[in-house]
Image (cartoon, rainbow, N blue to C red; front, side):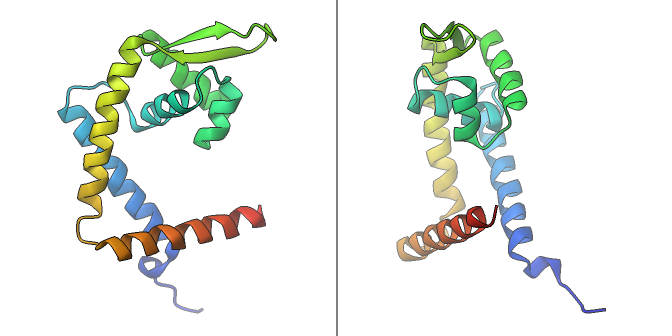
Length: 147
């Protein structure tokens, strides 16, 4: 059998990096007194960039399934961060918007996210960072074509 070192596997390195980044970001969110998960942050950010979007649109934007998005939105509604409004063109669809409380939370989350990103890339110079992002986008695009 051929030897395989998972520590050198691109998928493992990306997954490990993602795990550490999410864990660090979650810690910063908690340290700043917010009761929001990284998944909820992604939905809040998608709503901000797509005001009035449907749950299906948000699922697509966040790369999550609709069931997961519905569960997350239920929690965000309970926290007072978002509201569901019946779509005026199709009563089967809800359009989702941020509340003022949601906008305030998002503003703090954006600041926390920017600080987390700066900390995570602090050992890279500008060119290394740009090359990393460029390479990851190429890889992501290549994989997407295979699906």
